[in-house]
Length: 141
Image (cartoon, rainbow, N blue to C red; front, top):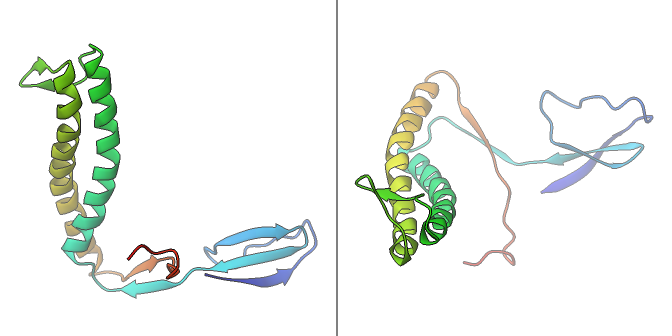
């Protein structure tokens, strides 16, 4: 990511640089702009959409359902299976599994609707994707 000085203005005259810039104020009298690399794509593959939604939902649902499992292990009826509350030690095991199950169901539903919507959107306008470069020293692979 490159950061470059854009312009120098008086304190009261900070004006927008472009239509939608990424900007950060580092000094009172200098306006800085962060240049974020972007790719313009015509279509996004359905597998990419499912992967993004699946990772996001799984990373969100698993901790939530682990919390529900811990609460159910203490006696609250936060988890139910076949209209029967799951409590006790069994809830600690069932909680994360229910989180995976819910993530898979929502990924199938929301991913399908999103892939269809992006496919329709691709007929009218290309998609502009902004991204951050990963330093080789920071990456695990």
